Structure formats: structure tokens, C-alpha cells
Length: 92
Image 1 (cartoon, helix red, strand yellow):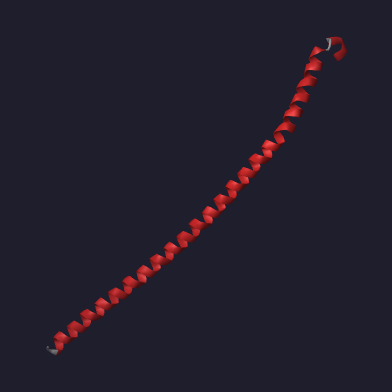
Image 2 (cartoon, one colour):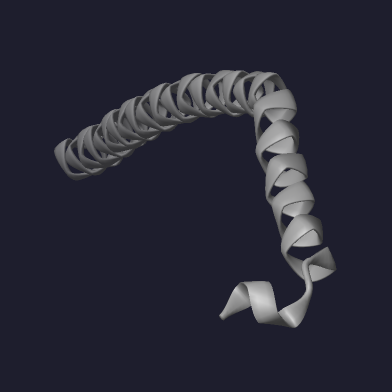
């Protein structure tokens, strides 16, 4: 093998090795981006879980307040009925 052929072979091997190193670096970068995406996804799931829990608590609270609200509305309705049943001269 001549010096020229040997130099060409060394250059080809060096270019191949560099291409492999570049590909490895790209793969590492891609894996890092995927890891970051997974972390963001996990954080979003945690936030959604907390939101779901908050909504459930709100619904329980509203359900618990329903009898109180119903009593107040019934009292208002009764008062209104009393006022409507009074003769007009008593209203003045």
C-alpha cells in the first residue's frame, strides 16, 4: 500500500469516526430532550391530578352547601308568598 493510499484510508477512517461521534452526540442530545419532555409530561400529570382533586373537593363542598342554599331560597319564597297574599292597602 502506497503512502497516498494509506493517507486516503486514514482520512476515510477519520471521517467515519467523526461521523460516528457526531451521531452519538446527536443521539445524546435527543435523549436529553426526550428526558426533559418526559419530566414536563410528568409535571403536567401531577398538575392535572391536583386540579382533579380540587374539582372533586369543590363538588363535595357545593353538595354540602346545597341544603343551606335550598333553605334560604325556600325562606325567600315563603316571604314573597306572604307579601303577595297581603291586601294592597297593607303594603302602603
